[in-house]
Amino acid sequence: MDLSQTLLQLEQRLLSQTTRRDAEEISRLLADDFIEFGASGSVWNKADVVAQLPLQPFSQRSISEFTARQLSEDTALVTYRCHNIAIGQRSPANSLRSSIWRKQGEQWQMVFHQGTFAPQG
Image 1: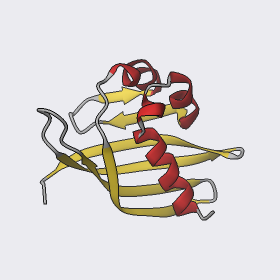
Image 2: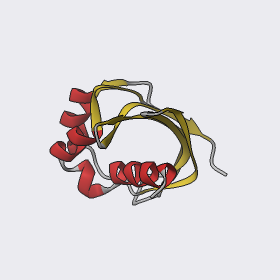
Image 3: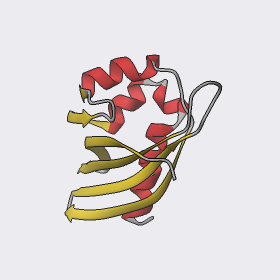
């Protein structure tokens, strides 16, 4: 499997309901020095995400326009559009996402993530 496909699968895992409910799996996927600048303007570290993500209401999401760029032998940047699907009273929403992944041994872990709200369309 090529790098782009590997990282796409990891991003999709982090968006899945199964992973978002599993603090241990989240902890495996995020590096200890992880930081996120959320679309809401909040700043999160690994401990915040591991503690809070399983408590958040789940929202189905899909990915489009995914690209991966290898920055070094063990580091890659991914960018994509994330589409939150409307459920109940929740409106659909789009965001631009970027993540930096670092390979630790044989495992890729997310080091940085940023979401920015984007207009529908």
